[in-house]
Image 1 (spheres, rainbow, N blue to C red):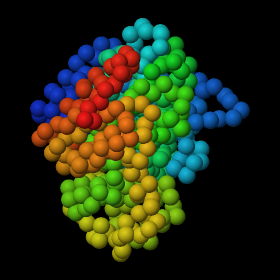
Image 2: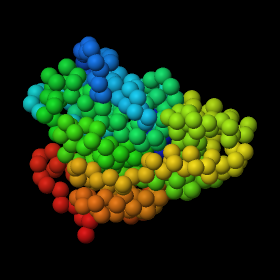
Image 3: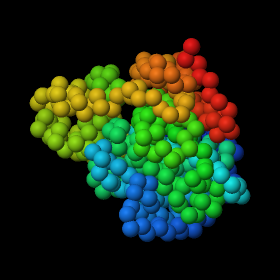
Image 4: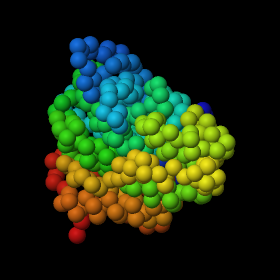
Length: 403
């Protein structure tokens, strides 16, 4: 069984012992058939816009090594928008079930959790051999008949550094992946198009990306028929996540986020704050997958890797705080979920986003998972999230439980 470095993610680490059964249970219906895709040529346009396809080629989607999904898949490059409003190119994957359906098919644009910053860690890099950690969770959507578009995010699978946890770039990448899927000719033949009801979904980093996409959809991609967003383990306030992680098991995430913001906003000049130890960690971070980065950063405090703390500077504070969720009301209802024993993203951050969105009059369905850690909640929450999205796709109104 081949295991790539992408399996070093927290979810990938859960693919052992008892949790293997939990993950596989989500995918038990998807054992039949492999993908036999045909190339979908990009449509040349005189003026490219967000979501337009730059290139596409057939690929395969295995939800576990040696277990192909009963689906067709395409690796795509598509136009999107960077955090500073400029056009960029992002890679991703479009997967459509081979169930014979040709009418309007629900489409989920799926945002994965932290995989690292190296191109080798991109979701699209691991789908062909089944080594992408969240592939079983994605397959659970496929077996329900939903098409799925999975962004690699900016700089993860394309030139440049990955703008990790820069919500402005993540949200556009998520929405434009849906647009690109709807424009892919081969996917159109299988029921994916402008009439497809759209769901937004993600956990952890993907929870941030999906929640930001939800807040952005009405203004950035109003033509998408977004029916709801399911976001879990959401790092709704990065400053508080950094405070929680500093010096702990997940301290490496702080450097990942710092590198991501420096990539999006070079004027922040991260390097001028780093000492030799910090520069070594940056080198590991830029080319590594998340397991390697977390191992390298374990137990380190910000003062261990810097000559002065950039998070105490106004420009860095402004950049980090710009990612804070809950300041805008999404145009479609939301399902939020969080583990009460989440050791990575504090539980109160999920509660805070729920409170903020409820306070703006959004129907929010909130589900907590008592005693569950970050990874276990990703697994346990996937089914309820998909069930909730399914009800939105079928036209059932969301009541929420804001109280």
